[in-house]
Image (cartoon, rainbow, N blue to C red; front, side):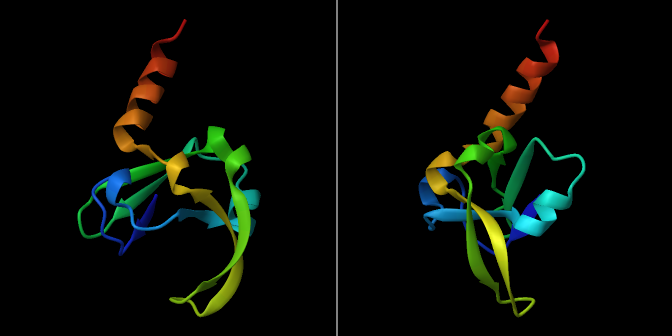
Amino acid sequence: MKSRTLRFTGIHDYDYSTAFVDTVSGWETKTRKPKAIVLISQHTKAMLVASADDSRHWFRQRRRDHKRQIDDDYYMVRTERLRTFEALVGYLQRRETAP
């Protein structure tokens, strides 16, 4: 989960063309990769999801972390690849009940 100070209620009003998934180093060192990264608006509590199954569409980008005052390589995803939290829950439920 990634909590951000962005204000959005869904994909329709997410004001950026891309979203941060994780630092490249952070993602690559995870021994058990999560199924999804959940992006949470601190203002509205709305959630959007970047699916790990969609990682072939992620791309690397060098960006500035203004909070930590460092440059780092990040995995980014285009906004149109994001899904709703409800879509993630539905996907997980279908996987759980599949024979």
